[in-house]
Length: 112
Image (tube, rainbow, N blue to C red; front, side):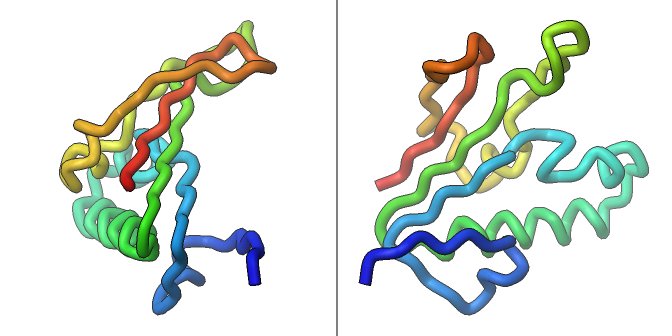
């Protein structure tokens, strides 16, 4: 039946869903701040593969979201979309929107 499954990308391997929502698809999250800071290409490549796993779990619809700003108003940090989005060809599908309950800008990618 209809249900919502919340799981990590790791635990989604081998699964497939009609619709997949992926959150946190920005630099310093995916790929992680530590991988970027260390310049560890092996870790970055592994995170790229994880992003691919997440993307390919969607049978019909994929929504990828990211924050434009993270942190509090006094320590807000501007975020960039994950480099993996461009590498996967998903950057062309970008739409920017703002939430009703926040003044921070957020972006979402929709792929039918």
